[in-house]
Amino acid sequence: MKSLLLLVLLWPGALLAAGGEAHLDRAPIDIRDAASIQRGAKVFVNYCLNCHSAQYMRYNRLTDLGLTEQQIRDNLMFVGDKVGETMSIPMKKAEASEWFGVVPPDLSVIARSRGPDWLYTYLRTYYRDSETATGWNNLAFPNVGMPHVLWELQGQQVLKVEEHEGPHGKTHTSTLVLEAPGTLSPREYDRLVADLVNYLVFMGEPMRAQRAHIGYAVLIALGVLFVLSYLLKKEYWKDVH
Image 1 (cartoon, rainbow, N blue to C red):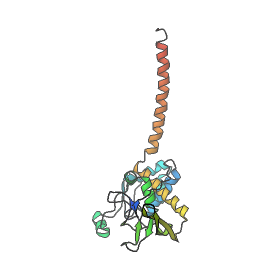
Image 2: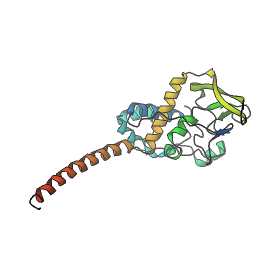
Image 3: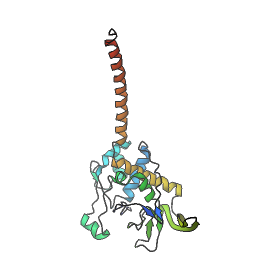
Image 4: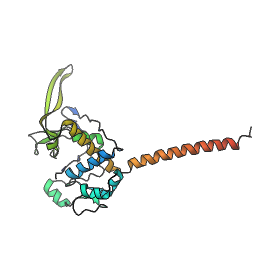
């Protein structure tokens, strides 16, 4: 089982690519799509949870997606975990600091911190770079310290930079080219990343969909009360001129 070692951007700042601000692709997420979030939870457990914790998220919250506790135990939990426990990891902070040079951050609210568009772009814009320590770089996070642990799924991309002469001087455009395909097609990989981001959004606020449903019900109830109040007011004041 693999892990996303340093998924989170550890320093604030603008997202800069070669020659300017990185374009963020819109993440095609839908918090009402329980099947997508279930698939994203599986990706998270298989690729993220070895090094990154989600200590504010309990496994049994996945029952909100239609999963049973037995399904959660069989498919999304490590041996010995209890379904009521949080998504913690056994690795100690001191060990993580010694092995990686930094403690991998908790991902409970990463989608609320960075935003789904940034995460979706980040996980799809890795490319090979022989000048970095890991051999990888990223358009959304230049000089990223985390290697691309999903590369077997996506394949290996390379960065092609083209120079153009314009009325205001030379400009550069950067394009990612898939040099070595992975086990998934580009469309399948994008869908996997979208599912993962969808789950990260859900994990950051599990009650979001339920709160929206409650909000609609409250608005409908208030609308009914308004109509009844208006009719009652007309009845009380019908003889007043």
